[in-house]
Amino acid sequence: MTTTVGIVGATGAVGQRFVQMLENHPFFEIGVVTASDDSAGRPYREAAKWRVNTPIPDDVGDLTVRATDPDEIPDDVDLLFSSLPSSVAAEVEPPLCEAGFVVSSNSSNDRMAEDVPLVIPEINADHMGLLDVQRDERGWDGALIKNPNCSTITMVPTLAGVDRFGIESVHVATLQAVSGAGYDGVTSMEIIDNALPHIGGEEEKMESESRKLLGEFGGGEVRLHDMAVSASCNRVATLDGHLENVWADLAEDATPADVAEAMREVPSIDLPSSPDPLVTVFEEPDRPQPRLDRMLGDGMGVAAGGIQATPGGVKYNCLAHNTIRGAAGASVLNGELLVEDGWV
Ligand SMILES: NC(=O)c1ccc[n+]([C@@H]2O[C@H](COP(=O)([O-])OP(=O)(O)OC[C@H]3O[C@@H](n4cnc5c(N)ncnc54)[C@H](OP(=O)(O)O)[C@@H]3O)[C@@H](O)[C@H]2O)c1
Image 1 (cartoon, protein in one colour):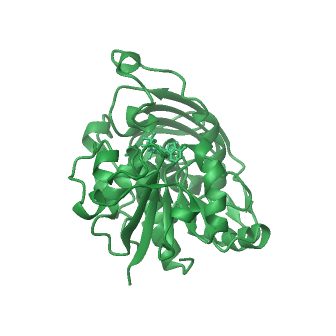
Image 2 (tube, rainbow, N blue to C red):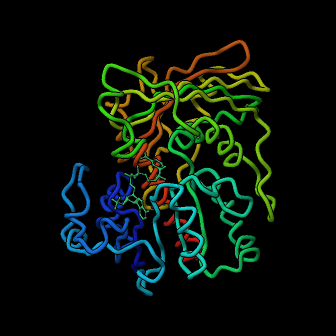
């Protein structure tokens, strides 16, 4: 049976990826698209400055964009995918959940709230159980579930493998693509012939979200992983695909070959958008690279390479597509898990 879904913030960079990923999806069909009041009332094909590399599906292009308001969402919509600026999402998502909608959201608000599941299905699907706590505490018929920040989701699947050897601390430096800032995020004058050594709030997100994702769910709460994480985030002039250099100090000895095997063994999950393998480990020292490797697993794969021993553990590089695995694809995969687990 097909689930009717809506996309809130459908005209933006991530919203367009939702539309692309949901075309011919085996579980979902798009029933409604919303955006700001500037776009409301216009046909989607006019309101969205379409920039993804496949045509706008005709049926979605013909939809009239609605305002982002619970009263504008038809009752037959069971699940909403959200890609709003986080300040807007913080205002809009709780009323949507209160009105009975299940919201699978990309936005950073509430990711660290104790009763909000922050999920990568292949890594911590069991954290979805927090929805029982959330419904008890908030009295919602709907529900709010989050996927992590794009730079965090690039690193955590690799860390899930490395943690077999007991991660004590992680240092990470990122080289993040311009699409991660949204269409209006970084101007050409800022980024051409340049790199920006600061992305507001990004370092804190990597440092906290990775500990929640790798934490243990004990029925009522998530106990954060006790590793220390320090991140340094940089914007560079690639279009899509975040590349990251990771150093992990480990409790146990592990050779680079042990670490490569552990990463390759992080399992995918039996859902339509989960790639197999989840983590591809390259032996070539100059891989992964954004332009060559961001579309692994249709953009849902994570790549790693350059694994080397350090005095305290291991260092390596990893990469994922920031608007697919790092955003829309992550929410769609969470939506698939919500359906599979009976939350929708
Ligand atoms: N880009 C990435 O790689 C990435 C990765 C992970 C997470 N995220 C997160 O995903 C969210 C969306 O990012 P994006 O890059 O897609 O941003 P974007 O391109 O700026 O798109 C923002 C969307 O939100 C809508 N919107 C803006 N203000 C609104 C309002 N007041 N009420 C209702 N709708 C409003 C816009 O509609 P209009 O077109 O009508 O203005 C547009 O549809 C952000 O929270 C971002 O942090 C992005």
